[in-house]
Amino acid sequence: MVDPTIISRRSLFFVPLALAACKDRTNIVELVGSTMGTTYSVVAVDRTGTLSRSSLQSAVDTALADVNASMSNWDAASEISRLNAARSSDPISISPALSNVLTAAADVHSLSDGQFDVSTGPLIDLWGFGAKKGAMGIPTEQEVQSALALSGQGRVIALADGTVTKLNPSVELYLSAIGKGYGVDAIGHALAALGVEDFMVEIGGDLLTAGVNPDGAPWQIGIETPSALAGVQQVVGVTGMGLATSGDYRNYFERDGVRYSHILDAKTGRPISHRTASATVVTENAMLADAWATAMLILGSETGLELADALDMPALFIDREGDGFKASASSAFETLTA
Image 1: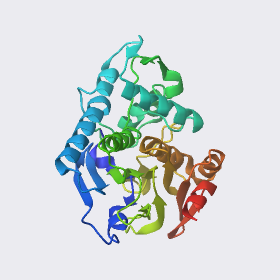
Image 2 (image 1 turned 180 degrees about the vertical axis):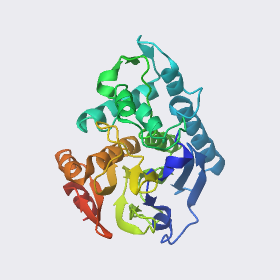
Image 3 (image 1 turned 180 degrees about the horizontal axis):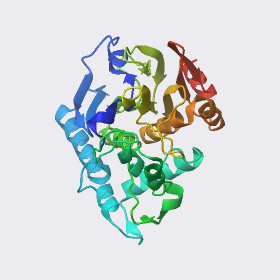
């Protein structure tokens, strides 16, 4: 689902903080692997001593296979790829899973003043950051405007009764900023179905926690300082929630001394240029955290903090300031970490 060149948009040091201090690791079942162009990690606490590693792995594998089959832009046979290939303005039936993701995307799109937008695929490709792997470079204004004409999900697609209608047949949807979080949630549902109550699931930095860690405390998540020499900026204890961080500082290119990030402003069609280097969001699930982290980074700390406070959403912004960084948090985030 996510090309290996863009997995660094997520920035979390979580496993060392979550597990290193645990006094007893004998009741921990850990799984790691590759998916969606990045890696996954599952940590389950086996309170009863009856959790089978093989059944856990099977549940994870099945959940990931289902998500990729529906939402991978890097699989030509996936449901979203077939939808993108269809050059029709007739309603197209979609699965409940894809309908769920697109409905959530539409809600975040509306609340973020259009900045979260799954229809910006032409822009992503134009700048060389997409699945079509074009050369990274600075497009012309005419090229940007042409790509923008195919973007703006509020006006180029319509959702209704398990269908999606492409109001412009050439519209293509990219789910890399929400589908990975959905995959995390899918694994979480699979673990819960096995009776696992305490776990942490992560894919490429998007994560979901349930219950408590092996020591009976909330899962301790470290938020990375947005720099090449990364350290831990802040630690937050999370349980029963999703968390994601979006950053602009690893996947980019430079031309004539100007840095162009892969995070694109949906209104201008160009990389963001404000001082905000990363945005972390905590929400009810990983899918929404995934989407909102991207939206908040595009909005930047000034507008993003106002919106986060209006929505009572825990959010942490880290801005570049001189040679260092300055963090600012929403009221709900401050309450969460108090």
